[in-house]
Length: 432
Ligand code: HEM
Image (tube, rainbow, N blue to C red; front, side, top):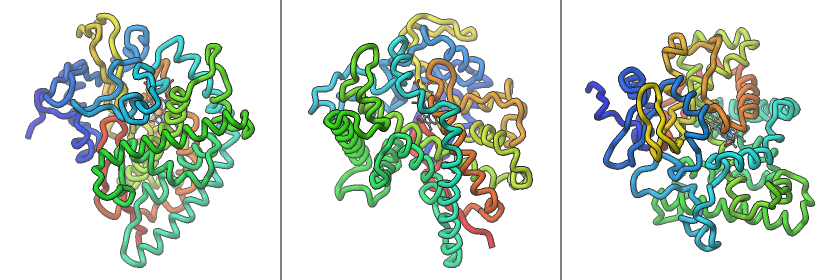
């Protein structure tokens, strides 16, 4: 059936679970209605912004287009936002302030600038360069274990899930180490952060629990865990000297952060670095398998790795959108956005904008220039870009010698989410 503006779906998590990125829908929007007032029964209306230039204009005007809400994420009507503190049992039990933003993504200047400074020092290019060797060692070990598992499985005629088997390993270890979290806790942290993106394994559900209930329980337990770390750090007077200590004992604008602010901050740094990079790696490897000529090009020319990483970031665009709220009327390329309106910036669509990218649906590891907006743009530009790039480079580099033996081993499954898009399972086989 031909797509029409009136019937396209870009808001329902189930649609993303079925087809992944709604590329055809975004193509239609970019062509016919680049700034489109999107109204559907089960979601509050919003402006869908799909062209590169408009995404940049909105991102470059943070005084008009604020992050501070009231609306935080594209959720279906009647579904409370998981992130919003104070709406769930954990926040209510602790009398949290429902008006406090969940984390700095939802703050605006000047407060945002001060909050960001508290952690940005840890994610600089220099800091990541110092960790590059360590990431390489970790990646080589994870890859060797995965390849061995793959070979054993293939003898039984089976495939192995690439997401849990390899793609989730380095992001988790990197975040765990940077944050100074105990390695014994990492597996549980993975289960909790998976639940945040709606990825719940049946064995992690308590009998009788619905998936949504598991999601709420997971975020409750995750907050309890972080609360424990914070209280321990306060009691011990920054004795461990890690990241948690730094956040707990440093003042922002003359004041120490309270539990609510600290838990939000830690949750952001842990969760933002986990699922996104994993999806870029898994999606990138799937793309390399589907484009054998590009895979061979990379295997024969490993010096292409840096530009391959950029193309994989553009191609996979794991973050589908972030929202802004207009604080004043604004003319966006001839369409009037009114004060109070919600605006959704669709980064993957901007990354396929034919006005900016030559033949955007060509997966081209040598693409240059490649000014993708996978990490957003402007004041909230992703804090973890250096980390994500460094992880992707190490992961791909370790996998390169085995890449030509990997093939897709069945139908992948996808996350049921409109914010982070990617595979929840990607079956891979070892080619004979
Ligand atoms: C491929 C991987 C990643 C993608 C696609 C991605 C994407 C994004 C995007 C689009 C934003 C912009 C938010 C906005 O404009 O409102 C953002 C912000 C952010 N990202 Fe990432 N990210 C990735 C990896 C990471 C990693 C590894 C970390 C680890 C710390 C991280 C931490 C953050 C933080 C803290 C922010 C908020 C920055 C702020 O509000 O000032 N991200 N990310």
